[in-house]
Amino acid sequence: MRFVALLAVVPTLANVIPTRIGTVIPLTKRVNLLVDVEGVVKASALQGQLKKVTRQVPATRKISRGFTAYEKNTGQRHPAQSQAVQRRAGTGSDALTDDQEALWHGTISVGTPPKDFTAADINNAVDFDTGSSDLFLPGTDCGSTCQGHAKYDTSASSTAQDQGRTFSLAFGDGSTVQGDVFTDTVTIAGLTATDQAVGSARQYSTGFEADQFPPDGLMGMGFPEISEFQANPFFQTLVAQQKTTSSQFSFKLAESGSELFLGGANSDLFTGEFTNIEVTQQVCLTNIVIACNRVGLAHNESQGFWQVALDSVDVGGTAAVSGVDAIIDTGTTLIVAPQADVARFYKAIPGSQDASQTIGDGFFTFPCDSNPQVSLTFGGKAFAISADTFNLGQVSQGSSDCVGGIAGTTNIDFWVVGDVFLRNFYTRFDVGNRQVGFADLA
Image 1 (cartoon, rainbow, N blue to C red):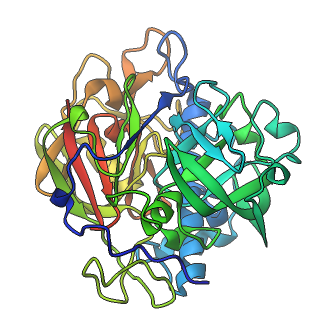
Image 2 (image 1 turned 90 degrees about the vertical axis):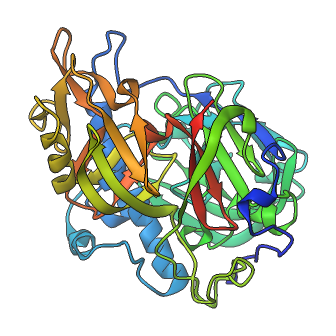
Image 3 (image 1 turned 180 degrees about the horizontal axis):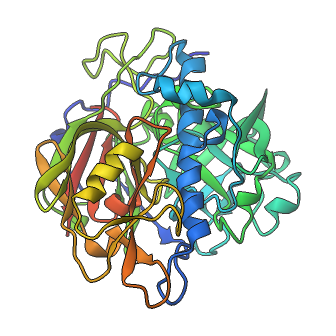
């Protein structure tokens, strides 16, 4: 099928749109399930965070689901997908006991009359995830794992249209999110998209039970090439239907005052200028129309993930790793990277140690009383990660060792930059110009 094209009314230059034009969606932080009340890390929760990105079976991790959808939608293998990942297709998988897809959720409404999924109730709302592209919610026939979640009742919506297709998203515990694809009216903070693809789930993974995943569902904000539904994500639908004057959306992720801003950036929340980095790995095929000509791209170019060049990962101002690719993902808590890169990074931190025997494979510790000066360099500018976000917590009560927020795996050839980094900066995602921009928080 053909994806809806973004219309030419959207300006192509980021600075054409005033920064305050747009719509604010307040975001609520989930309860921190990674540490206990004493500030000691929960090893099983950290392992779950790593596994959800790096499952060995491609169908059971989010990034690889995106790879699979990209190949199905475009007819080509995603350029960032390594041969090593493909060779692991026949291996087994471990149980995923804590599927924390994202830390931040907000309010949406779906259907006619509108059904609210609201952040006012911690067990409602949806997570906003730039690492995927589909919106799904628990349907009325979803079983026990959906208890405590607000349900999406397609029969109660006059605008819900069954598309006659099913979807299935696999998770590491062996269960799945399965259901039916509908189109319906979806509204966020007064901005309404019609005929938006929505998944009505008949089965939720145990990782999506309310005690582990308080929001009701998930809204993907990546590109349509990685859509399991073969449809435009919500924001691209808004732009295509001329419901927003700018093709940008922005995030502030913090302990308080967090928000998703649709239609630009909130100038009250950042200072200085944005450092913009072009989205890479562009392959926009003729059967996927995303206004390539309008934004000056060749007709055979487009994107799947918000993937950019990461110049270097620095310790004390010196590059420990350089020249790698990074996927910017609000739906990942940690920073996850190839094991060899992560080992080189921690080697540059005095006193760091492999924590595979205490926390789990891929994790490292560093002395709690140290203050590693860690930064990521994008577009030639170093962005420092605060000690509070890099330090996940003590290994055990009274321990002098703390767990670092960068973890490794042998299953990927790129970096997944999640909330450990994003909590430090204001982040703008520019669909029209295919850029990610970072600015200092106000």
